[in-house]
Every structure is written in C-alpha cells, then in structure tokens.
Amino acid sequence: MSSISLYERGLDDLVNVNSLFTIAVFIGLAYASPDEKSLDDRAECHAGKSIKRRLVIYEVVSFSFFLLSSLVAKTLKMHINIFKDEFKSKFCRFLRCVMLTLAALGSVVGCLFLLLSMIHLVEVRLGRLSCGSPSSWIAAGTVITVVSVALLFYLPTVVYVLYVAWSQS
Image (cartoon, rainbow, N blue to C red; front, side, top):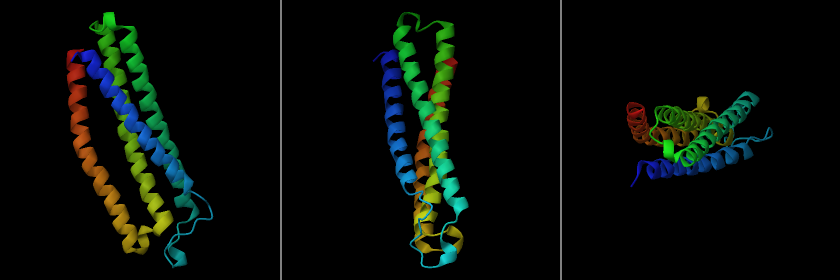
C-alpha cells in the first residue's frame, strides 16, 4: 500500500470519527434547555444556569474543534490528490505535516471539550456532582474513565504518526 493511500485512509477515518463526535455534540445541545431539572429530588442539586451555560459553551467549542479537524483533514486529502506528482517535495511534506498536526490536535482538543460537556450534561440530567449523587458520580466517572483509556491508546499512536511524518519532512 502506498503512502498516499495510507494518508487518504487515515484522513477518511479521522473525518468519520469527528462526524460521530459531532452527533454527540448535538445530542448534548438537545439537553441544554433552561427549564431542564435533574432527576435528583433535592432542589439544591439541580444544575444552575452557569452549568447549563458552560455545557453549551463546551459543546460549541468541541464542535468547532471537530469541524476544524475535519476541514483540515479534507483539505489535506485534496492537497494530496492535487499534488501527487510533488508528494515528496520538501514544501509539500512540510505542509502535510502541519495540516496533519492541526487535524490531530483539533480532534484531541475536541474530545477534551466533549468530555467536559458530557460531565456537565450528567450534572444537568442527574444532579450536581457536589451533591454526592451516586448516579451522577457513576456516570461522570464512567465517561472520564472510558475517554481517558481511549485517549491513552489514541495519543501515543497520533504522536508516533506525527513523529514519523515530521521526521520524513
């Protein structure tokens, strides 16, 4: 398999994953209603406007980074297709590395903001974490653990790919 097709497949996968995360963002935004009360019976455990506001902010910021990542990845794919003959030129390799780094960073930062928004979504739906609700802590702990484990696998791979790309430029 040629290095061009590896780039293209990797970029397609990145855009597909970003699309799935974008769906999660819009699901989170659907629960950002100002009238939303948590399932916790205690009034002081309902999420306030500041938590709901941060939920929307984190969702929008997350969406922005996923969009940045996807657009840069698509641009890189177009660049590769347009400049196939110059694939090994110094400038094209440098430009590819910059775009690949930007696409990867956008995806990782988007994941972190999505994680923050999911924690706030848990607080909106199940009650504030500061109230000690077991269901809130289980949900928040699960999402933090799963995303952390996923990033532990994803980040070293991305760093290695970026290292290889930059060392060849």
